[in-house]
Length: 110
Image (tube, rainbow, N blue to C red):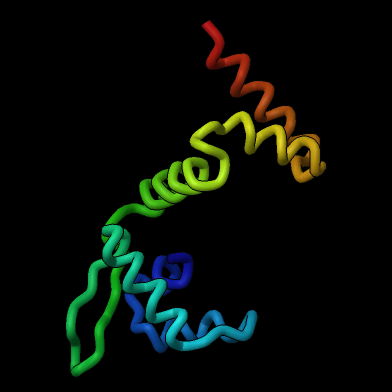
């Protein structure tokens, strides 16, 4: 999704080439992931000169929110506190991030 957002529209080849600059990945893997993202409604595709061109179907923030919810459901049984505990225990949160989390908690309390 990040590649498609950055390019505004992209073919599977475009995404594959962009990802390959950072790591080894199979073309078919990219093709499969883009198909899944389209099925989930995150991408729209159109046929242009015998190639499928993909565009974001939703705003970046909407997609990120949906993906985080999906991740929480699959990995942490839908409970964000488990994710926060995991991040805190593994020292994955910086001091600034810890302050932000504390502030968000305080702001959400009645």
